Image 1 (cartoon, rainbow, N blue to C red):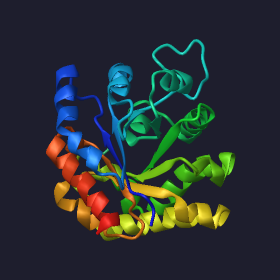
Image 2: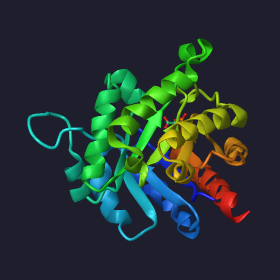
Image 3: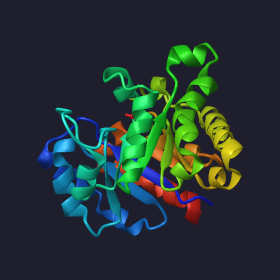
Image 4: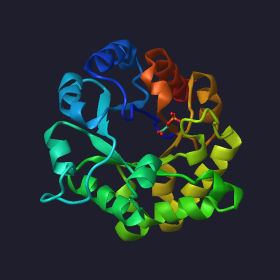
Length: 254
Ligand code: PGA
């Protein structure tokens, strides 16, 4: 059984007082030792939240990172800077970055590589738009997004990484993929990795993201290839996030 992974992507929400209240409400997470847990705060707060959570089981991830090592890239930050600030890793390829910052597969692969080189954990997000799903292109799109990293960096690049399947049409819309829809894509993603390395494919955690909440988490986690969740909106509510993490823990402990 793969160890579940749950991340709370706060996106561009909350000020310091909101984050403090949220983290205070998340203290029961310390008891959930069967799950890998992460929060993904907005960039200006990463260093202080990392310092605050040092020594706890809750890891801190950034929402993005530059693929460049250093230099004249105003507004960006490097993987080494994240590492220096106590941050454990970063999301790469989130659909909002792909859409609004026009980050394509090559940029995402460079970000993934930069994180690995700094010893940090990449969480690679892949997912199709509604138009792509309706055109029957779901597997082609998510495979292309995955292969951009897999072909250039090899299956070993995923040893400490998490893959997150986030259908764009399900993000922030309240339209969750059904457990069966998500399972089908997760199994296909695992099969893509298995072409390169069957045992690494078996070990890879594939989290689902897209309107995950307390009410639908257990149904998703009941699927054999859904190893956790990347949670947006519901991660801003401590009780919702706790319930989702408890459902992930129950996947292991029964
Ligand atoms: P959502 O966001 O849970 O609000 O749909 C998920 C994400 O974008 O990671």
